[in-house]
Each structure stands twice: as C-alpha cells, then as structure tokens.
Image (cartoon, rainbow over all chains, first blue to last red; front, top):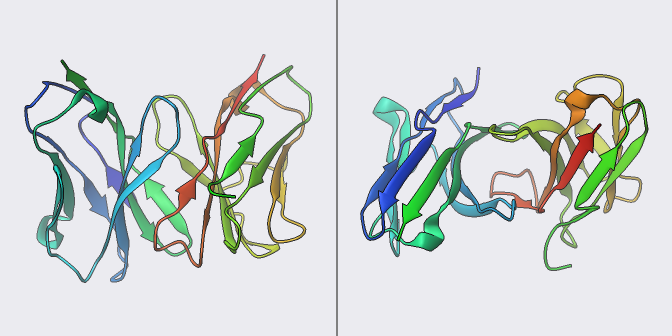
Length: 112
Length: 114
C-alpha cells in the first residue's frame, strides 16, 4: 500500500524563524518519486520539488531545503528565515505507478 | 496555453442535477489527471488519461462519475445525480509523460451541491 503521512496539521511561526515540515511515506515499490507542493489560498497546487528513490542527496533551493532519508522513509522540508508569503498548505506526495498519493497537508502560518 | 485551465472556477448546483467540469491542459501534455480535494484533505486520485483513453479510472467513486477526453486535449468530468457529498474542489493536472516529473495543476473547480 502507498501512504503519505504528514503528522503536523497546523504550524505557526514568527517571521524569520526556521520551520520544518515532516513527511513520512510508505511504499513497497523500489522505484518511486517524492514531491512537495505548496497550496496558497488561491487554491492552485504549486510544484516545489521532485526526488526519486535512488537519489538521497539533500537539496537546497534558496530558503528551501529537503532532507530525504530512505532509512526512516522520511522526506522533510525546511524553510529557513520564513516569510509571510510562505503561509500556505504544504503537501507531501508519493508517486508510484500512475497515481499520486498525497498527505493530508500541513497548514503553515507565518506571523509578521 | 501557459497553464492548466479549469472552468468554471465555482459551481453551485442542486442535489440530483448533472454537472460538467472542464479541464484544458497545457498544450502538448499527453497525460491528464483528475483529483478531488475535500476540505482539510489532500487531493485524491480519480482518473488518469494518456492521450484519449482512460488508462486508470480506479479512483472514480461510483458510476455517477465519468470523464472523457475525446481529442486528447480538453477533458470533461461529468457527475450525474449529484449528491451533497460530491461537494469538493476538483483539480485537474497535466504532464508530459507518465507524471513522474511532477504535474502542473489547475486552480480547480469548487463544486457545491445544495
């Protein structure tokens, strides 16, 4: 079975604080892809990153960084020096076969 | 077009009515997906098209739901005899191949059944 768990339902931080969003996944596939999407209040899902199961290198893109650890089946997302514009719901997703399996999302509020 | 376009953005319908939701994918994208997102939940898979054919419709909840993509571009999701439980945001996404490179999502259609 494929499953993505985002245990944090809501997080609030003060602007400029760092914040980490957790994602734990389950799959029996040896080849799979992991994603993070941002959903601002406008509703559109915005692609942030894709990682395949054979590449455990961490990635940094500006204030965003991702930590992929197969040993713990986790793909955590860290925002450094958060900004108000980061306020949104963030979804972690697993792709295996033709489908995406989304977590229930983490709602991040950055307080000015 | 530059992005995935979904129309209408909002639809209110009475219980029992028929509705059609339209998705216009990015030009050249052969793969098209429909997802449904209920309040406070992540998107749930409904159906996947590769070209004109439905390659995987295992997510359609029942036979009241149907989707077509007759020319391999625009797709229409059709819901018959709508029920209040069908109220959700219906998201469409497209991609160049099998979706593993990440989908581009539209802004969704918010369907409210009253």
